[in-house]
Amino acid sequence: MEAAALLASGSSPGSLALSSSSCPFCSSSSLLLVRDRGSLGNRSHYTNVKYPRSFSVRASCSADSVVTLLDYGAGNVRSVRNAIRHLGFDIKDVQTPEDILNAHRLIFPGVGAFAPAMEVLNKTGMAEALCSYIEKDRPFLGICLGLQLLFESSEENGPIKGLGLIPGTVGRFDSSNGFRVPHIGWNALQVTMDSEILEDVGNRHVYFVHSYRAMPSNENKEWVSSMCNYGDNFIASIRRGNVHAVQFHPEKSGDVGLSVLRRFLNPNSNRAKADRAKASKLAKRVIACLDVRANDKGDLVVTKGDQYDVREQTKEKEVRNLGKPVELARQYYRDGADEISFLNITGFRDFPLGDLPMLQVLRYTSENVFVPLTVGGGIRDFTDSNGRHYSSLEVASEYFRSGADKISIGSDAVYAAEEYQRTGVKSQKSSLEQISRVYGNQAVVVSIDPRRVYIKNPNDVQFKAIKVSNLGPNGEEYAWYQCTVNGGREGRPIGAYELAKAVEELGAGEILLNCIDCDGQGKGFDIDLVNLISDAVSIPVIASSGAGAVGHFSEVFAKTNASAALAAGIFHRKEVPIQSVKEHLLKENIEVRI
Ligand code: 1PR
Image 1 (cartoon, rainbow, N blue to C red):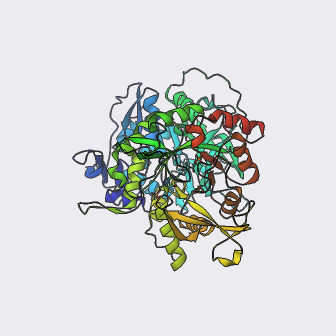
Image 2 (cartoon, helix red, strand yellow; image 1 turned 60 degrees about the vertical axis):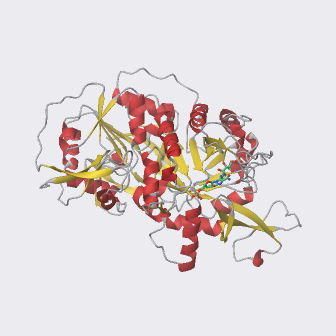
Image 3 (cartoon, helix red, strand yellow; image 1 turned 30 degrees about the horizontal axis):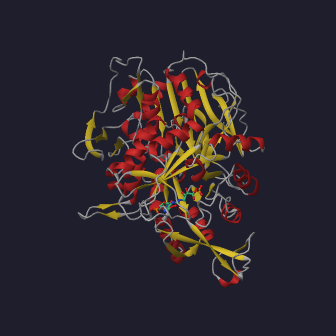
């Protein structure tokens, strides 16, 4: 993981990063890079600021409505900021270790990987300040990596020493027993100790996204306030006195997550009403997808294709307009979508950073949509008309900064997989590899746009072919699935099976599996294809394209190992509300978040 180097180079998304080298707890100086929103408008750049070796505790000036946030600059904490503001609190950013010691309440949403996070904390003197703050039992909430860093060490690119406040190590989930890694989605907690911040969670699901977890042991049992099961029991939250930390993401866990944050920020807040949820395990996700592009008048609209053709069948052939992106996303959040995907479907030909409306859509949506947001389209290296080169990492970083939790790569992942197949060597330079190295593979989705190619004999092609459930137009019994790029416009010499295996190795954390033949048809998901891909990889697979009725969702979950099902048309046309899909799945004994 090269986050620290990246941060120092100024291409990272965060607000603070370290550039000097110094040893833990005795830095001669901590050289921080402070984000400066100056002449570049919303593009961040960095200014070197020196802080003295020792720091003293200033008199606390925190008012009750102010929360101190430790953002060391390794990823997207915009969602945490939005959730805190949504709850009516102001944010004071940690700039120096003193700010930690002076905090009235401190939230630490760790992002990125363990090693670079510890490196930054050690070099800036923040590690020492954090230990001191926590040892004094001051109000603290760690989130995700902000929990893991409290432990003695982590196996992530390690072993690497952590803050050492809690006995135990952080290890990787074991995918050999059929559990897909990363652990992505809504899972249940088993509360083991009274913890006021968890009081409203009850039997409701909360959102996790991680590949590493801390394990319970005799030595740390006094800290553990809840566990979660995914293959085995891992620590979902800890609590001692005023010190709390959660492995899940409250800022992405809808209402229940907001109530966790609210209870930390205001311990006297009212108890939420009990509800009928019965969370017991990882839920199957229902995802609403918004294909977004500018129409002929230049307005950004949600559109929807019929086998990827998004123009009306009229003389004018206008771009089909199904609504406004931010409004629809908010609507789907209220309706219970577990996740929302935005696909900038003309990103392959336009430069996404020039597409400011799309970034605005993300910014506005993330202000009050508290479930994960994925954005895709146009993530690749790009040189603009002035000769300025943008790396795919910069494009992704801008998406993350604007509120995306995951980015999705289409065309560029196909080229990377082809090259990997051809050379057998990981170049480390593809957008997929670079972004997953910096942000973690759980933040990188690969979106596949395959088209079915029927064949008589599976040996006719060099790609994995399968026996299909429905014969082809000339009675063909077999098909392979050809990958396409540029929104289905160009077929490539690689199959969906080969692509899926390659991108998993290159660092994809999840696969969004579309199917051009089924897109917009309302006849159900391509079960053959979903089985082909979900059995080929050990990362989560999202089945997409073809949903036309609630039964199609239960079918795909009953007949395949898909972790999530995504739909667009039926939701946009208001044919089936998301809640009806969930009710149906519940009746079919398929666990969902309600
Ligand atoms: O290649 O990295 O720029 O990414 C482009 C992204 O845009 C890809 O993820 C690609 O899937 C998507 N895309 C490009 N063109 C289209 C199009 O429709 N003309 N949309 C397009 C893909 C498929 C799904 C759709 C499901 C469900 N749309 O997103 O939402 O098929 O639809 P349904 O429930 O109505 O059947 P890059």
